[in-house]
Length: 179
Image (cartoon, rainbow, N blue to C red; front, side, top):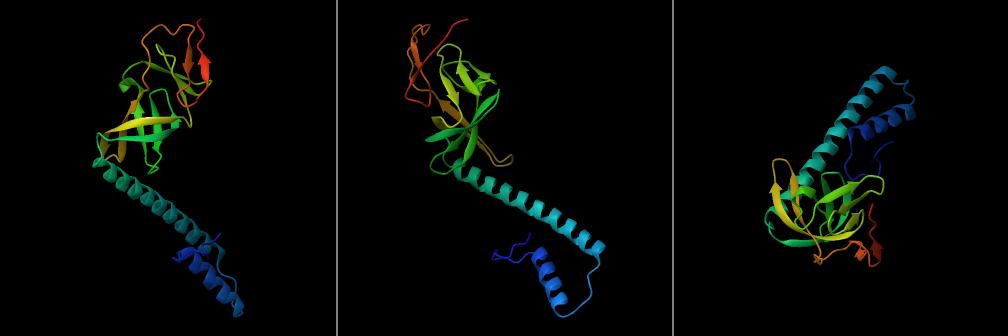
């Protein structure tokens, strides 16, 4: 695999070009062991370069959001864990996390089988792709991490035992069941 369409020539491309020129001019086959070593080295450097690119992009995203601490944004849930909800912002595609322990208004459990977060008292359900509203809480440039406050929709504090509870991201109602 080579990067022939890339505007920047990489060393693996140069290796291919040199081999093609060598063979077209009637040259002997190159030493396989030397080429293998060069390929391994080039692959290692490509991985390091890709990681550096991702880290620099993440750094700039966090730097951009550092000026917006306290502001609210719309986003969608992009990941769930037992400790938090990852949210990707709609406008910028920047991702951050809201820790479940910090969500005000309810205590949430992660349902691994259904891959959703469920509020114990409200029955509020959240899953991948659900639209949410967040507030920027913290921007840590050193760790390249963003922390969000997940802003829950207004819910009545009355008993929801048999009342329909709206799914956070959907328009349909979901009945909560008791055990």
